[in-house]
Image 1 (tube, rainbow, N blue to C red):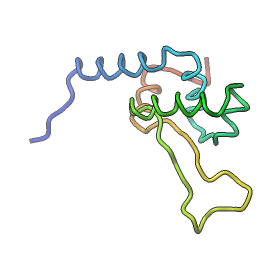
Image 2 (image 1 turned 90 degrees about the vertical axis):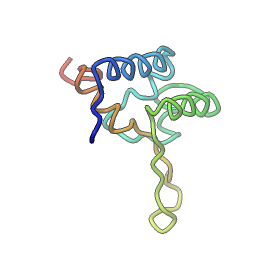
Image 3 (image 1 turned 180 degrees about the vertical axis):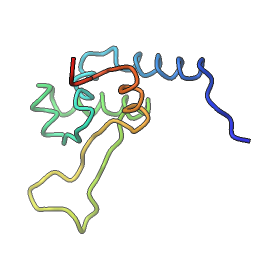
Length: 105
């Protein structure tokens, strides 16, 4: 038997995500919901130091908001980033359902 999420579960998930995004710097990190920014891109767009970004990214990963996408060794290009940070598919769907980061607004 497949158990479905109740409305309360979905609301709790939504509020847990919003709670993790209370910090403005964390919102800045996920402000590119359709992109996969590298650490260098996050430094440029947020103006934050790499160490600060790592701390926020760890919090976002722990909350299942952000995931790390890394190129395998054989697909890496010298001098280009190999690790990128993107929002999870679950969070992307949640944002889309609630018009968060909607490009038309």
